[in-house]
Image (cartoon, rainbow, N blue to C red; front, side):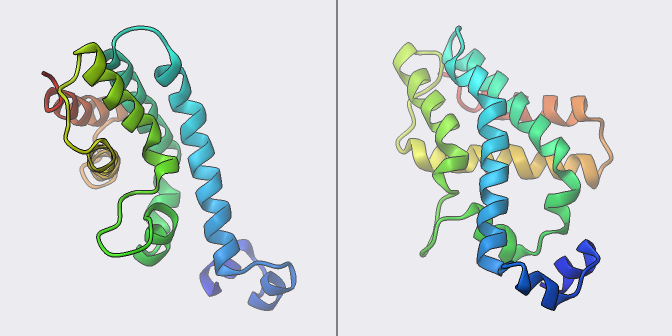
Length: 164
C-alpha cells in the first residue's frame, strides 16, 4: 500500500479513507486485466476458421495485451501477481477468467481436428497462458526484442506443440 500511495502521489491514510484496500486493489486489477484480455481475444474465440487459426490469432491478441501492460506487470510484486492471476489452494491453476478463451479453443481444436487432444484442457490452458505471456514479456523486456519478433517466436513454438 505504501508503494501504491507513493505512485499515486497521496498518503497511505488517504488511500484508506478512499476505501482502498489490498483486496479491493487486487480485485480491481484482476477485473481490469481480465476484461482487457476478453475484449482482445473475443474476435478469435468467436470468429471463423479452424481452432488452430483462431488460437494463433488469440495468442497474438494476448501478446498485444501483454505489450500494453508490460510496465504494470513488471512492477507487481510476486504475491500481488499471484493474487491477481492464480486460483487459491495447493498447485493452483491460472484463474479461469484468464484461461477460459484458450481452454475453449483447445476443446474446439480437438473437435475439428486442427489441434491435438489434450488430457486436461484447463491445465493446458494454464501452461499455454503462462508460457506465452511470461516468455513474451521476458523477451520484450530482458532481450529487448521487437513485439513482432517476440510474439512470433513464442507463438510459433506454442502452436507447433499443439498440432495433431
